[in-house]
Length: 119
Image (cartoon, rainbow, N blue to C red):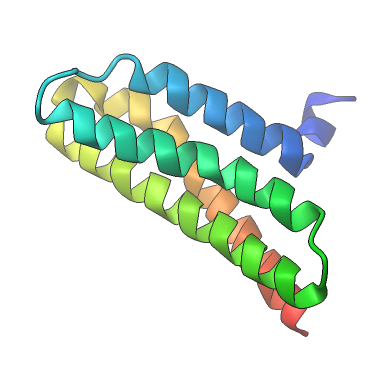
């Protein structure tokens, strides 16, 4: 599979996103400020793929729309935490840029899928 084709394999893409989030989170400080932000980022960043996997084997169209919607919400939440990190920890501004872009792209993909599923 080419890199271009892999980019559109959402199962692989969301898994890669989760792994990148975990790798990045390991760099965040483990102090009283960093710990809760790290936890929230990891929870939302890894939930994107988990909810996509649930949507992929949904039991009904309604179930699919619901779970794909949750995947989108989790991508949006990950994007939020990445924004917080980028604005609060100067040393991570550049590092969060690519993750933030990917979270935004995943969010937009899931919103589009949900809208199409409602038609």
